[in-house]
Length: 353
Image (cartoon, rainbow, N blue to C red; front, side, top):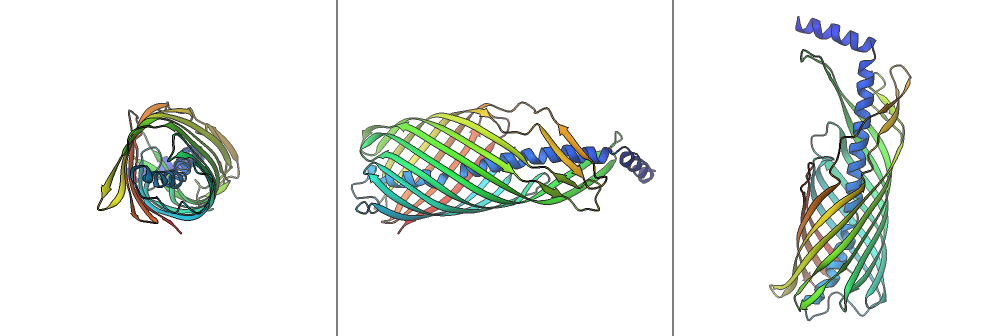
């Protein structure tokens, strides 16, 4: 009887197109998950530049020169491996590599540009990105450092993403019987422009201690191209229209840096705590899709659940100039006072040629 009931229920569902409607709703949920994950990727794309600033600042706590300060032009490379766990987006690992050229305009001002590539693989994906391969260009400015208490870091990036996405369409009856449980795969492209700026002031009280407040602004503009989600013979397969979204957030925080000697090489321990305010979360409220089953275009709208617009972020990192031209770092950060926790751990190296 249970199997018979499932067959009858499925016939009714297909006759009423309830499965296609459920599929359309799952598509907009997937679109928002993709958007949040791409926002996180955009934020991560600036970490290499932030670490470059930290690497150059190590000489503040060391008598020796940091990297080659005689040449006005430098070339450096960054490579890192990250583990990310974001409840509202994805959980997985991300490998990143970048090659940069830098020019010293003034002793306290450096500008640079480079290319970056990354690959992220996520775990247990029901509605999200299974694999994300990206390539991009980046430009940055590092102002302040050795002789100034004021400092400002600016980073701009433009990246293209190739996404392998998975969408789960599940429909259960009132009696608990599962009627539809389809997994629809698709390949999507996305373009993301991102800008990050961090302005701060350090109190340089001791040679090896610096602390002070900082203000950060984070912006991303995400365009996800139209794509086909599912096989042509599936009733829940869809053609999904392209979407665009913008996201803004700000950080107001305090940081503490402590320099020390590690087996004869300069090292630094840094902690940051910040209050984050989301100005615009970039979530999509409506989406247009075309069913491959009946060829009809449907527009779906959803009411977004309230997200945490205000929460805290804590970061702890340790870095070390292991060689005259080699800089290593280990970072860990997490959010708090937030419903959807977002944490990551990153291990990386930078080498200056």
